[in-house]
Image (tube, rainbow, N blue to C red):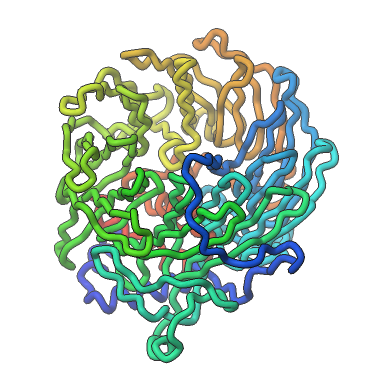
Length: 631
């Protein structure tokens, strides 16, 4: 860690041009080339082409859904298991779960949707992660075979016969998908891959204007003047892409459209049914974020690129941005100077009422020379938690888009990694600030008076071992807050010196009106990815196993049933025995550990891993771009 911090300081002292060149080189390593184009659907299944119709009436509601590694539909669990592919668990009688069916797919299964007796599963032809370290498919003779595709694949599986699911369609995408959304009958996927040219007209100003509008030509590049294009061939810079697949008839889904544009795709935001915002680090200007407005208003799935704008600073995850009516809001860390660097946490508002001419409405500085780990927008209010030694929590009033203000703030102990608004209450998940015995923590706030937020209850989990950590600190979906059931489920990992092994499980916490109360725990085989309740029973899922638990007595939970998803022997025979993630969760420090940013930023977001020296260089880039604020 000391070495990385020194490398980060050295990188900050380099001239901007040198830093940019190093960044471009490392980005080229990070995203392997994907030169071929996305396969087109049969002509008979395509719509007539892009339309310029008016934006549909917002009163016509289209459902927006986010994919996950598990979906529960009609009494069945559908799992996107990274090692085994699709697995279906019959849980119609939750106390007696059965493995119903399976489809073994190539590559690493990432996430899935379920709709109309069909599963739409995203897989990636990148690397497996073994305790946080990327390992190639062919690292051992027994390791999984290299996939027969590059980039990403969307597999459509008919699951009407649960015992005999059948693949009905596959869509290969040349780049690596970072995010997906389903908007009613259309599935959208956004990602990145490198390209040979710098797009002409990339003169993006800080007010949000850019000249990259246009439809994609047959080569996937935004149409522009060829003379200007030839004059700007300088580096191999990454391109982002958005593709749409119409799934109105799930038996015959078809690729509708694809748009390719300059930039990167780290995260997407789909707060409304008509717009997608694709955001990523600007590869030509370190420490800035490039945001592209993608028009997804067409019900059939035709895509239109609108304006593109640059935001000073960088963000950490999808919760840092949001759209409310005609205002796009984003919180970023902006930097000034080379060394020493001054950085500020700022809220930015942009007017997106005219998607072809987006302008900045407001900039609200929150704090200087502090980093930020968690943000959450909630209507006309937002919450942001920054940190140095203490963790200031800001309550932001966004009722006037042109003049957002800090309504109130409170200093709390520790580091907040995720925020969950609950009306007049707010939950903060994170870690305490004890370097020797760092543990997961949960704080309940009263925010009924935004000008005077106050802490009502705080617990620090665990009394076992020297150090207990939680996967919830790097995967917010691993946390489950069930307000009506007054229940919080928090995954944990600790090392048992008597067993010489890691212990994984779920901590049960009561969520009372003004108080949090730690109850019993459920141990499990493998790092807990998800947990929830069905028919008053708790279910727990890891990559290795599925378990059902009786929690009628929350202090003394009782195991009811368990299923192996992949056995220890299968992991051993496949050369994946060391790929269990308990050690990774244990060693990942949400403040300093570079592997946290590797998995949370590049590994998962871009879907691509690089072995050996390339990985080390990429971690240095992560130190330059992100660890500089983690002091």
